[in-house]
Image 1 (tube, rainbow, N blue to C red):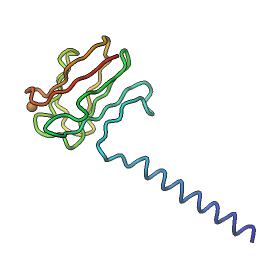
Image 2: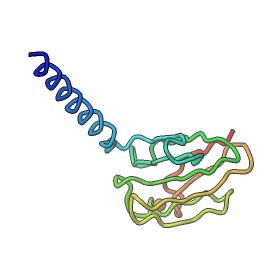
Image 3: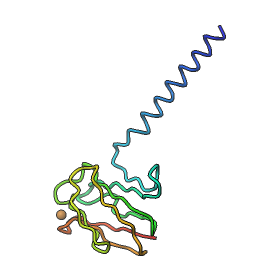
Image 4: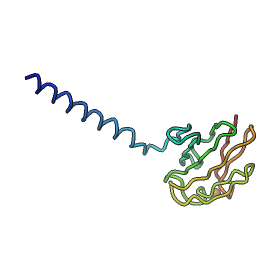
Length: 126
Ligand SMILES: [Cu+2]
């Protein structure tokens, strides 16, 4: 009787753990994630496309800490051609796993944009 209960508890734990794993891996909502989770000090940002522009439209990062920006698959066309002129960045990110990476060495408010300047946003470095 006691044994049966213990096995049942272990079963519950395994099921519960599986649910937690599934939840943490399924981040397909397109929300931007800012922070160095699981990747050393790199600040990872994922931008989506909303209201004909990049979303979120303002991204805040820390100075002197590497930044990686991804564009998820809602971003299309020339919006995938991503530039931050103040940091000399211009790159075509052809897939959601492509990214730009740079380390902001100055604080302030900088413009990011697609290469044609249709989509724009603000990068705040503090
Ligand atoms: Cu454009």
